[in-house]
Image (cartoon, rainbow, N blue to C red):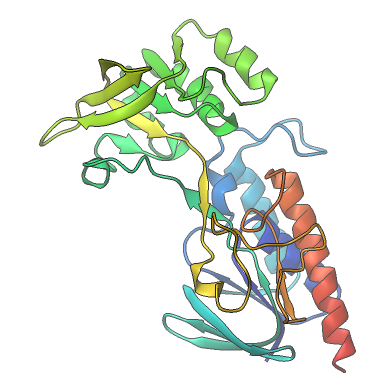
Amino acid sequence: MYDIIVVGAGPAGLTAALYARRAEKTVLVIEKATFGGQITHSPRVENYPGFAVMSGVEFADKLIEQVLGQGAEIEMDCVTGISGSTGDYTVTCESNEFKGKTVIIATGSHHRQLGLDKENDFTGEGISYCAVCDGAFYRNQTVAIVGGGNTALQEAVMLSDICTKVYVVQNLDFLTGEQALQNAVNEKENIEVILGTTVAEILGETEFKGLALDTKGERTELLVDGVFVAIGQQPENEPFKDIVKLNDYGYVISGEDCLPDTNETGIFVAGDCRTKAIRQVTTATADGAVAALAACRVVDSLK
């Protein structure tokens, strides 16, 4: 039995594992997909204290190396549920079960889709959710980015260096990304921002052709070689709905103490999967530290 089981290996989960190991607790980290989480999709991380700039992959690699160096165990599996009570939890996965005295839920979130017909058909064939991963396929071509937040603007700037033309399609009448990113977008001559516009349809039958846009009732066609969707995230908390309370958007209801709304004293939540005002890598790592130290106190109380 582990002292602490961490579900998710993003910045929050890995930081939790790091702090728990430094407290000499036995730790298992369970991750179903990518170590490092969504940060690995960021081409440039410029707001983490102590580092002027680094890639998301570089940040994740350093954190994983640090966690493994502290002796945490890592398992690749998909968690399907948590049962039991403080001091004796069972974390059920698709291919195994693990026992832990406490559990930290740090599952993060995944890319939100447009929800349009043919979106799944063209995913990977004209539609992408990661410019870092797929941007190179569109070198010297024309692309669109749907979204107006930090991720969308970061990707627009990155793609402008390799693409002939980059369109930014935002449903609001203004961009929501940081001012520094907006300034960077405005400085690029090959980036065109289209505001107050939604994507009405994905064009193409057997292959992707572009987007049908709706600007306050006026329909136009935007013919591009590819589109990158950057309209936010969705949490992945469905397996935990029976043990913690979720809000209407699927986030675990929790305060800054990382204690979820539950009767279980051995369950904690950290990072983008919980309700919070700011979702940044700095707040995710802070959550990881808070949740880990709280879990350590519970483990110590069981002795």
